[in-house]
Image (cartoon, rainbow, N blue to C red; front, side, top):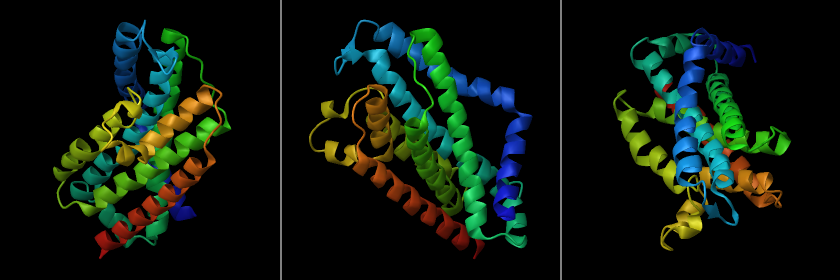
Length: 245
């Protein structure tokens, strides 16, 4: 437990030192998306019989929590390849499980900060009110936990810092645009829709919208996300162990 807290608090202390810059950087993309797509382009557009902004905000929450959680890989890579912090963790009496849990939860923390910013911007600019209640917190937590685990796993698996950009460009960015963030996946070609439908970000977007629109939540999708979270975390622990070896 102490090992997990040490890892987690280290990341939080680093975040605290540049908190204002971090919050400002988190605000730019959601602000642009809401102004350009939600208000500018989608002001008079309805999607699934709802104003487009009410469709967009839940999608941005899912996408932003994914991006910010996965983005821990950048700092882990810098710490691993340049600052040699990972070597210090290797020499410390710290299990792979504790290290993974601390890093993943730091990614989850960053994800929740981005979600809070989107909720605030959506409320003041678009009048979209979305409360942080337990169902929403649970959905965002699972989505962020999955991608923080995958971010950690990718950071441990790659051999050079530059390789991380390839993973982001070829996997994470397409997920953001195809996973139901900006348009319903029902509009996608039939041959790709079955694959997109079971992506974590797609499930998160659809579940957040269902909660926001007071529709029944899909229990089996929540269970599926829980299974994905556990599986991705095990992958992260395994890649840490392999990196140590």
